[in-house]
Length: 266
Ligand code: SAH
Image (tube, rainbow, N blue to C red; front, side, top):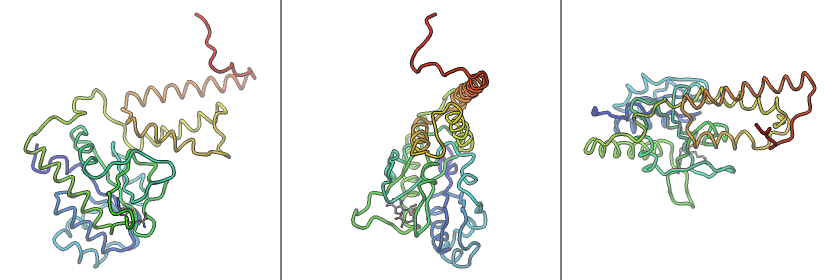
């Protein structure tokens, strides 16, 4: 494994940062720990002298930072997306603390693109952003005062990643998922899958988009936990396509739907 190892595959995504100083502080924290890819989603002010001033010797990360207009764009090629949050949410996701999270990241197949996503200073990540993540990360701080400064949160996460990297450099075990027979799906492929799934559920009258409740959120959580590979995704997309085709034939010929759970004997 090279000196940079898996750290070079981990990008830090800052969503809607209000204070450019925090962007600089994050860049500094990253470079100190050996990370280099910074992506900014709709920063309030960037480029900025304040960011450069706070980055000190890490101004090169700011120069190379990618600025995009949506989280989807920031993570579209990632197979693992981790969202950070100080608070639990209404529909809980699997939550790791930074050390466990570094283990999960280090177990990804070599060369996988991985994102750790941080929210803005005022509101943190929205539920919609968090639902685009496979797992959530919470730094277990004092429950009476749980929100860290953004740069400090980036520092803690990057530090744990570095510690894991140093441990691996000493022992060099094979990553858990190395040698898997199909690549994991990218975030943009999962988004297309969710659109297809939702449309199919509408087509078969299972889902009412006027009254969505938490159906899509719960299904997103299910598949986020599972981590689909490309072969599995292609099977599911095939099932959805055939389901849609049969539903439209049934509707066209006005056949009543078959009762649920009854199978024809062969
Ligand atoms: N007021 C916001 C917190 C914003 S802090 C809220 O209550 O959600 C800015 C960002 O720093 C957060 O979106 C998150 O990415 C990170 N952060 C702050 N404290 C954290 C913690 N205890 N665990 C994980 N991430 C944290």
